[in-house]
Image (cartoon, rainbow, N blue to C red; front, side, top):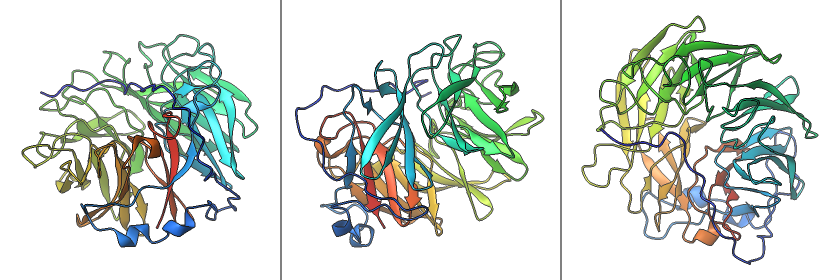
Length: 406
């Protein structure tokens, strides 16, 4: 049975005394592509590269995090709201326990630096928009120290919607929320009736309800990922539990009825930490471990039907391939795009594409830590350019925002 960490630990590296990359965002139009100096020359990077080439294009850096008082080690996907990109970092900021930031018009701005109590600390998940404000989660902090749900305005005014207390309401929400009909839904890694995690709902006025507490492991355990609405229910993944202890895909109704759709066995993947997406009536996802490659198995990309039939689309294998995908996939016109924390030309991460029939290609990777390292977050598409974050590397070794034109 594999060993998995309950929460990824942010890596804090000493900063190199190098200049910040000058390729900052400039002038994102609403709903359109951001104009990024130095990136236009890389147009066609996706078309120019095939899978596992000896020399792979470098993923272009758009912003380098600095640490204090800036954010650092971003592990969450960006969120595009009216041409401004918003995100979180689990460390950095004035108290070094995380930030909410925005990037627009050529500069980055820290909207809020977390202080621990009562406002929370260590936001690992991304943000979601509801009613003109942004909502997110923190793994720690809040009124009881077990994590919190927060609301933040575009001007940076933050308020706590709900503070977790562990038992029985949940502990350590590790990913972002989804907005479904004006109600927010999410998961916690721990807490609940038995400490194996929960699925919960919360209103914008702070009324939280545990929809399901994972019980004995066979039903799944330690969900780290966000949820997705599919065929009248919420679907998600658990890193542990299931029949073999390799994790599950589960289904839960808003009335609290849970069932395991698939239990991973290692050969089809292991330890999923990313959420799922819906494409063409099926679910698609990734696992950072397992796969059909006997040696150096670096995770899988898979397709799962509503009836529970799982097909491995690709088994990642290190080397020049992507490896250890830990983020939700992105659907752009029927092609899926993702990031991997390892693999690529020197093993410190890659951006890849994969078709729904399983044809996989590496678009770009990082040849040097100074360019970026270990992307843990999913991608967003803004006008034909993919934006993402790396938790490490960059000119200050505090992580980066990168942009990959399609």
